[in-house]
Every structure is written in C-alpha cells, then in structure tokens.
Length: 258
Ligand code: ATP
Ligand code: MG
Image 1: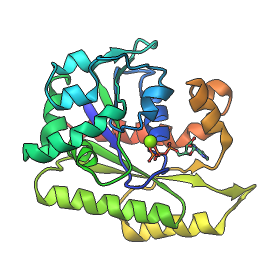
Image 2: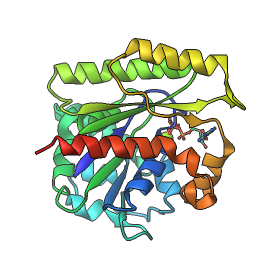
Image 3: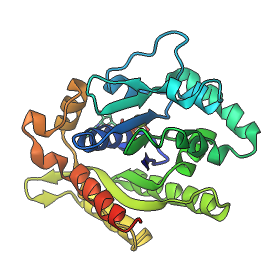
C-alpha cells in the first residue's frame, strides 16, 4: 500500500478536493482506502458516508481502541473504502501530544492495513496540529495543493517547513510528490497575473519540486464533488488533468521501487 497524504497548512487550499478526485481516479484500477483526518469531516461527507453513533472512526483507530480494520467502511464503489472522521477527531490531539511519538502513530496503525489496499489517500486538516503532524508522518508520498495566491504560497512554505522539521527528527520518511496549484484563474487563454506570479513564487521556493497541472478556478469541481462523481463522468475530462498527472507520477515512482 502506498500512502499519499494531501497536506497544506491553511484553510481552503484544495486538500479535500484533491483527495476526493485523486482517490476516485486511482480506484478505477486499484483498491483505495480514503482516510479523513480532518475533524471538519468534509471528505467523509463528500464520499456519502454517515458516521453512526458509537461507530469507530479515525479517532478510535489512532487511540488504538479498536483494531484498524474495525474503523474501515466499504463505500458503494467496490474499490473504495473509508476511515471516516467526525468532529470528535479533535480529541486525538491530546492523545497524540502525550504519546511522545505522535508523528509516527498513524503510520504505525495504517501498517496493519497495508496488505488489503493498493493506495491510501489521506485528507489532512488545515493547521499545524498534532493531527497534521501525524498525517505527514504517515506519508510515503506527500502532495501539497496550494492556492495560486499569496495565501497559497505561504501555505506551501509552511507545509515545507513542517516536512523539513519532521525529516530532521526522522519522522518523515516519504518523499514530496509535488505541488498542485489550486484555483488557478484564466480568462480565456490568458492567465491572471496573481495566479501566474503565485505559481512562479512556488517554483522559486522549491525549484526541485514538480508543479503539476493546475486545478483551474471553476464551479465544475464543486458540481462534481456535490454529486460524488468524477469530472469525466460529467463531461469535463480536461479538468481532471491535475489528478491524472499525479496518478502518472505515482506509477513512475513505483517503477523504481523494488
Ligand atoms: P480546508 O482546509 O477547510 O479543509 P481544503 O484545503 O480541503 O479546505 P477544499 O475544501 O478542497 O479545500 O476547497 C476549498 C473550497 O473551494 C471548497 O468550498 C470547494 O468547494 C471550493 N472549490 C473546489 N474546487 C474549486 C475550483 N476548482 N474552483 C473554485 N472553487 C473550488
Ligand atoms: Mg478539507
């Protein structure tokens, strides 16, 4: 199982959008485990899962109150599975902080599920918290969506700083797949100046990292999300390019892994 963590340390950077479409695309030919690691639980909602009272979620998995498999639910698509969240996930903060090795807890727990899935796609919360530290620590591959704006550049930089600090502690052992610019604005064939300069700034900050094709500013992503569908199923195949490119990058990476 390859664990792909979608992280970016500000709100509204396209994390949930990216996790949703990337996971769905991967599930066309592989078994995918979605992990909702955000107490806002947007991914759980968009995947159409309702958490029942007292049903195990990511919180119980993190606290080791259940076997990891008990927190996994099947979705209507036979290749898609979910470890859901609800707002109670905030209670994981204290546990992770006091465990003394919070950054590796999620990685350790997910290992027990590795034999059942090809990919694990993790949607992270927006701030630098114990939960986001645990998700980054669980990554084989980290993907950073960032708005094509000044706020997005800052989110990108803060995410890289977190990765660097975890790497120094030996708690990040994965690799950064790259950046997906989010809400990139174009008017016909002309890109907005703000978008262009934000993406240029991202390149300057991390020239070694891949910049994937952008998620364009468009209502169509929201439409597809709300209907739980892929963009190509709604006839907007070209809007799927960012996720296709990430899928391809994952395939290429896996060729180098013995
Ligand atoms: P949070 O940090 O709150 O979890 P996030 O990083 O997960 O946010 P998303 O929820 O994916 O970000 O997206 C933020 C908002 O942008 C959502 O309301 C979503 O519906 C909207 N959105 C998604 N795709 C697009 C798009 N291509 N153009 C414009 N808005 C979009
Ligand atoms: Mg989100």
